[in-house]
Amino acid sequence: MIRVNEIKFRLDETFDDANIIKKIEQKLRLKPNELLNFKMVRESIDARKEIIFSYTIDVETTIDKKLIEKGAAKAPKGYKAIYEEIDLSEVSLKSRPVVIGFGPAGMFAALVLSRAGLKPIVIEQGESVEERTQSVNAFWEKGILNPFSNVQFGEGGAGTFSDGKLTTRIKDTRIEFVIEALIEAGAPEEIRYKNKPHIGTDRLKVVVKNMRNEILKQGGEIFFSSCAEALILEDQHIKGVGVTDLKTGIKKTIETEHVVLAIGHSARAFYKHLHDLNVKMEAKPFAVGVRIEHPQILINASQYGVDHTNKRLGAADYKLTHKSRNGRNLYSFCMCPGGTVVGSASEENRLVVNGMSEFARSEYNANSAILVNIEPLDYGVNPDQYSDVLKGIEWQRDLEEKAFKCGGMNYSAPITTVGAFLGENLKENEMIQQNQSYYSALNVSYDEAFDAMQATYKPETQMSDFSEIFPDYILEALKEGIVNFGNKIKGFNDPRAVLTAVESRSSSPVRILRNNASLESFNVKGLYPCGEGSGYAGGITSSCVDGIKIAEKIIESKLF
Image (cartoon, rainbow, N blue to C red; front, side, top):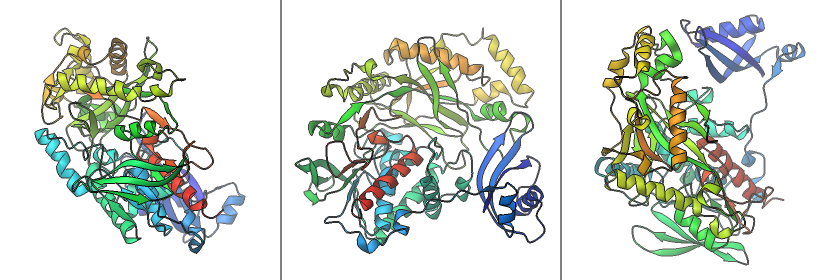
């Protein structure tokens, strides 16, 4: 196959197979019947002037060799899974591998291990996605928190209750495997080529259930509502895992020599257990901040101009960055077009928020985290003191406790308006008049858009003073950054935009160190730190890829 770039469509052109074929034939100067097959690889949108969709497409023709000789690019070879390249009869383990955690990393590690015939045992403290959804809804509607099964813990991991974003910065051929596995499990086929693919919370629930069923069909076992409480070591080698059934209280030990540690970035109790075992870890930078909400129609109009109502464009997103005068990096994160702000607490008397969108991205508000970078020195870490490794967790907890108190100590979220946060008077704000004119030219009523907007967090919200939550350097960076972002997206710093606190779980505050060659823990043989919670991924796709890498290493360890 050959790779063809820049197959372009205007917004008013019909996008279907017939027109795609026509444009490919024109681009490559093909005769009728010379085109055999094509596969969409990537879509991007250029909205700088006239909106143009540009596609990269892999094409199979009867004259591939001739086209390549003339300079056409060969399509890169796809990823081939390790279990497709080896004689699986040669792979045998004394004991079955155990996967702790069934988020993206754990799920894909278990998927590859099960396809290789190794029948993994998965331990997940949260519930299956069906039961988990009920627990999450009880929290959102009534403020009843299940500390073991919530937005952070349970089948599918934290990503299940977000947007299912698959955007990643990593370059790895395993991404193709991830995408195809997700599509096989029910994800929309467009994730194969969209520039910013997403699945949506509603569809992710179906996908993770189908992936669970495949693992079970291949002989794997999955234990939900089961808490891995202890790693059993002998001479710094993994020998087993102590597990408690959270529904019955029954404790058991699972013997194993291979543990995939895919615990997620909120597994604070297990971090403490690892620290007690002297498993090598280090404190790492992370980020904290707030969620900001605007009317989605304004984001659409700002990003797409006069064509913003065209349904083919969908809900617009944004990515913003700013370097503040006090040296802090500020950036938008996990932007959720047409979504809601959701409660994401996993510990009692602490409050955390996140963003979520369903596949259609059809809710009234747009929301995004606005985060400020935090370094280990900010929370008092001495790099030479191993005892300081978990200080980032305590620092996060302090913020979450303050947010809980500001919200009224009932899981209502503290909110404020941008106007109150910046100390600006709505009536005296000249910016509003300028924005009214700008959006009026795009057939959007600026004031009506904001008047119809409400904070989306449930169960309740409470107007609060964010100076009671954040230290001054974070407040300063947030204020400066929000004003700066108003220069990039008109209305971003409108006084009526809503801020909700606190977003504190964007990434893990620790990294569990591992050997670059074997991917095992630095000092515990058979322990494989994996995914976002171990500090080696950031987001769904990179976590899935890391899970695949770990599974490959376990398989290879028994072959070579």
